[in-house]
Image (cartoon, rainbow, N blue to C red; front, side):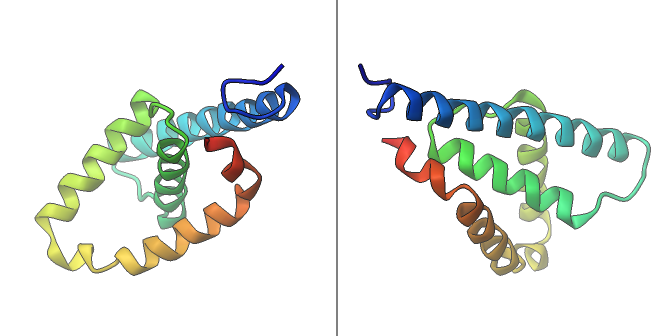
Length: 112
């Protein structure tokens, strides 16, 4: 039998478990980031990058973004439109995306 991802059931289950863990961790981090924003505390750049990377992985695998992560992604998009200088930091985001893609290499075959 094969899974919905077109691979043996055990590999498909493992990939889904990994994606579920990405969703869980992204939701927890998004909650912390939103809480920091509400309390006017600084949000480390690493947290934002991690959320961007998680969103990229989830989208690449056809997963819906958790609502908290979606809120943050919307806020990031709106902020980038307000400040063109911030948009030039996309090179740093591309580097972070590449690092996450490397970390999630085992999932790359799972998106089919």
